[in-house]
Length: 113
Length: 113
DNA sequence: GTAACGTATCAACATTTCTTGATATGTTAA
DNA sequence: TTAACATATCAAGAAATGTTGATACGTTAC
Image (tube, rainbow over all chains, first blue to last red; front, side, top):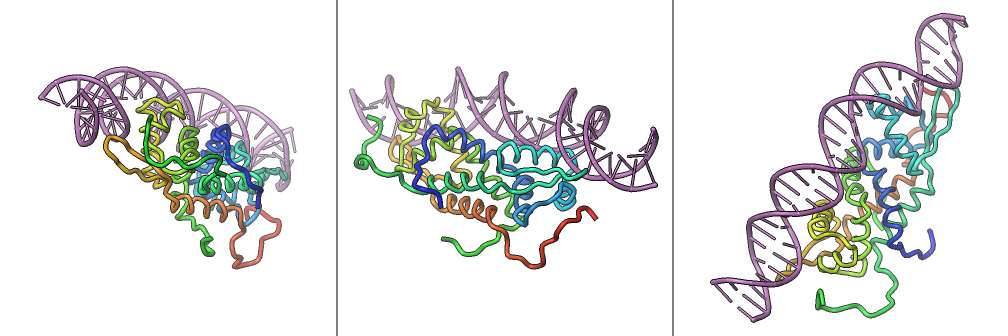
């Protein structure tokens, strides 16, 4: 498991980009297929029932987000999960679920000056 | 930690909806603020530098996704993180990072019939 | 009461994202 | 070489999402 790591405000944009890549059903389904290991595009295509260019589009979104890597072999392209990005996503979600280290005392009641 | 739980294909849509709520910088930043506990809208507004109606829009997206709950007190509205939804997100990400229980043997090489 | 406030909602528009069909590129088979 | 194939990319349109300013609604202060 990754160190302490309080997610900083600056990370919000980065996190948002990562989650955006996971914000589409087809892309999540593709990721789920890739849990089993490397898959070639044609397999994903068949199983997901997605048109060729559509799938290609979504795979690129995942790739741009760093969530998958691709490998060419002859005329086939194989995609697989890249664990690092998932680890980042995992950490961000965990941090959101965790109160940050306290520096001061909690403000109790009172709002807006 | 939540049980075994292989994420099923059917869950892809649900997961996507959850991640969509986290796919915007302002929303992630709001969630980060809420880690400290309940916050009233005006506080979020000040700290995030977001126009009133804009913030209201984003808070509603988070609420619709179940990621936050709101509470009215007089003219103020307080938002806080709802841990359950975060737990679900957490589990989904973890599952994506984990090979599923194997039912058959891994296919080695060969592609597309 | 009336006014000022905090928040939500709405309508219009801007922007982004997705889908589709067409075409391009590289690869193997004949 | 030519043809069939697997995949990527592009352009155009469709759909979804985000932004802004205006307005509505309930609440507290006067």
